[in-house]
Structures are given as C-alpha cells and as structure tokens.
Length: 242
Image 1 (cartoon, rainbow, N blue to C red):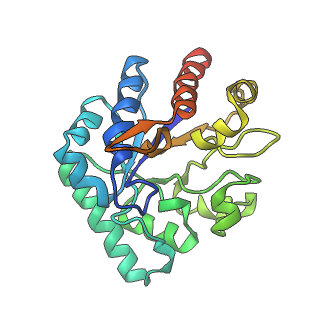
Image 2 (cartoon, helix red, strand yellow; image 1 turned 90 degrees about the horizontal axis):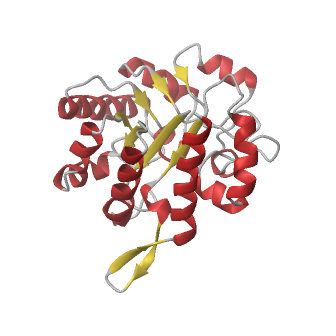
C-alpha cells in the first residue's frame, strides 16, 4: 500500500491553509502513532508556509518521502511545452535544495495529466508519476477533466516513466481516497479493502489535509467528524491488513 498526501492550499486553488494548519498535524500524528510512512506531494504555493510553520521539517523528520505536486495548482497540460518543462524542473530543483535529497515523484494538480506532460516529467528527471486513475475508474479526473486511462494508454505511458495509478475499489470503481470512502461508509469500505489487498499491483491511497477539516466556525476551523472518524478507521484497516 502507498499512502499519499497532496499538500496544498484549501481546495487546491483556494487562498487559505486551514487544511495545513489543522488537518496536516492530525495526519502526521496518526501516521507516526501507527508507524506508517507515506509520500507527501507538496505544491509550491504552500512550500514557504509549510517551512514557516515547521511542518515541512516535521514531514521529513518523520521519514516520509517528499515529492512534487507542481509549483502552482494549475493545469500544466495547457502551458507551452518549454514553459511547463522549466516550471516542473525549477520546482523539482527547489525541493531538492530544501530537502538535500533527489526528488523522484510527481503528481499533477487535480490529476490533470497527459502523455505530453509525462514526457516532460521524464525529461526533467522524475522517476515516477502518480496522477493517472486506474483503468476503468470513475473518478473526478476521468469524468470531469478528461484524464482517462486504458490498458493501452498505460502501456504507452510506462514506456516513458514508472506510473503508480491511483487505485479504485473493486466492483463500484471509485478512487481509493478519503472523500470517496466516506461516501460509502467504513463498513462497505472494509469489505472492499479485503479484496484490494490481494491485488498484485500496488494500492495507492490519497488524501488532502483539508479533506478532514470542516467549515470555519467563528475564527477557528473545525474537524469534519465523519471524515476524521473515517481517516482514523482507515489507518486501523491498513494496520490490520498489512
């Protein structure tokens, strides 16, 4: 199982960091309690904020992998190739300078990726991508953003870079993500998860820090109780089956 976190502003293109302020420490504490290591795909618009809050160092200190989520939360497919390449490369180098380690992975904002972008990732020195939904997956990326994966297209992608597709639950074919899991309930999820763990391919789960933070109440963000409970029980499920 690959546990991944997309670290970005609220709702990706928002202007607040309540998810990072309240959700990210909760995620980090729970992962540390259960000795789980993950990959944190960091977006450039939140990097300085993470560093100032001491959370970037905490992610690294706890042994998690840092990967790129792009320097901005934009659709890189729409940029001219040279501009997209320079932006992908420069942010990769910035993360490497900050961590002192090679940055291997990339996840496109909102999973918006195509073969052209895959080729640019390889050119920039990335070793893997984790943006494509699993073939046959009914995700927001596939339904709303024209990011579709077939077995043939996945073969073409893997000619250029290692691809860790975002996993989908069997039968109902929804992504292995916290917001989707909360829609079907933990009892149903636990049933499907037992099937997933028998797959030969990696299971890639994703969450955003703002996924477990509810609407503002007064001056303080409040946890969404259902999603907080879902996240805790998800960690229990991971520990039970792995």
